[in-house]
Image 1 (spheres, one colour):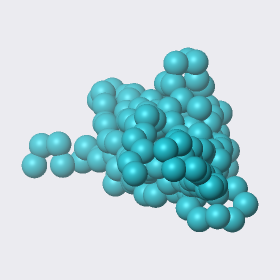
Image 2: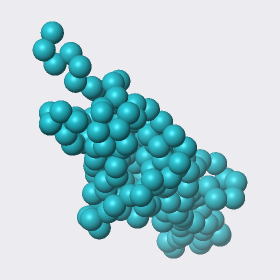
Image 3: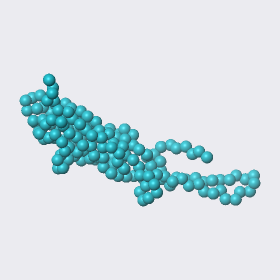
Image 4: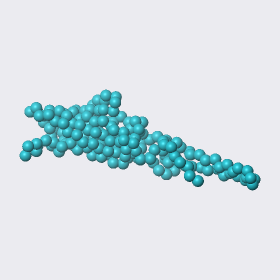
Length: 178
């Protein structure tokens, strides 16, 4: 039927990545386009913050391609005619010392251009990623540790003081219950 030859753009979710690792969004077209087109994408931060993600890079068929940025989180690159797969947008994440829990971000992609015969192309899709903080007590682990000092011996009628501290910052207000 009409429109049966119009390609579909797919942006795969990058899934869950530990902070400090790279989120990879694989993109594909289900049909080739007979002219060069432009892929544009924006990093949408969700619950992640700007300092949690780095500057993306793009490869097509394993080869790095020129990426243009407007400095506002919008990027674009040329997709050569005939390309259907092998497009990967890699977004590095930052390993910091602040415990943030899970954070999310996504990329919203749009493929635009014109076919060799003059038909306009405008395809969109979105891929999501979740950044996790490392857990545990090994080097680089972000999970904070709470310490409570002993009050020592206190004479009856005096106040017992228990000093409490976290060894790492947390990025949100917390509640201490005791």
